[in-house]
Image (cartoon, rainbow, N blue to C red; front, top):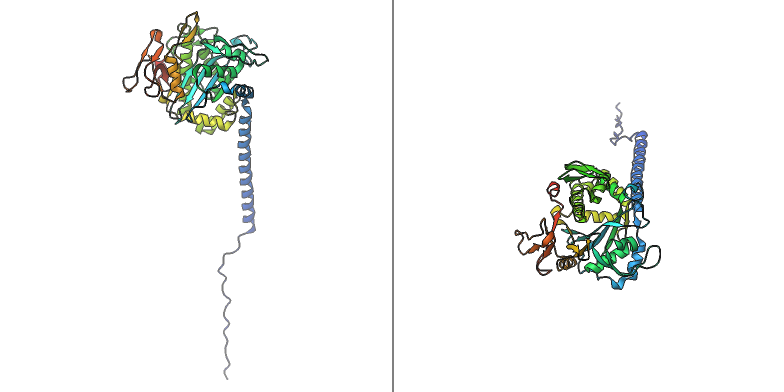
Length: 400
């Protein structure tokens, strides 16, 4: 007798992946949590540093108020996006700077530079204004109250008795150029900035021993720290004929060397290098409300850094000895007005060491007046004026 034989099939094999151990989930959660904490810490640190740098900047609201009061007297805005920034060096004798002289109780400015940034940001002109230049200073409000009378006075008188607003109005009256922004840096800030980039290179034709500037330097190419740099740009009696003219030339050469170092070292693109520079700059700057934030200052610095060194030009307003006082200067006309017109119209000027036309630049014409003071010929807007000056890429030992 036969019976049905039923063969039982084995259960189907489970081919799915086994569940990962629970401990792997725990590690992933820990890693995610740690990563989130690191990101938050970095973000918080960056925000803290940004806020700290931003808070370092002093806003000059008093000047803004004064300029609004006299808005109807000021030049109109230019037709392009060119910018004109007045840079002022404040002769502050506090904060360890007492050795440079006794604090007189008033602020003074030995350095005034009008920086013109071309609309296309491909070139810039830095024009020094001599402290001893005779200028028409308008009636200004005194910082402590009261008013000054309009007068013909040496240029730095405006800053000493009327502050930045009076200086800006004096420059605008002299040049017809609307000042868009202003920055004031003091002695201490200047030294900090130089130290933050590990010094600036200069070149001396002869050794310098100037007790008044506390400067003792050998001849040749060398790197100055902040203290030495301050003495170098301020000294008069230890160099050449001791004139303010030579001092302005040194200041321009120094700024060109500083610009070259910052640009070539990639300071603004390197977080480890840029923070000390920004910290030094922001802690010593007084700025108008349009330049009183870190983002605005950084944007300005990037604009300047992108300008080729050969397109950043330094010159001094054409001037000569004042007819009534050999210790003062006066403008040379019509050269000065032609320069002012060129900057107003955003026309590129040409600078050469002797102020003569560069034959390699068609259309440029100019001659050097007696005493080395440049004049220029040509109509602004059609012919580029030529002035004695230099560019940021000039060899520092060639200018000593």
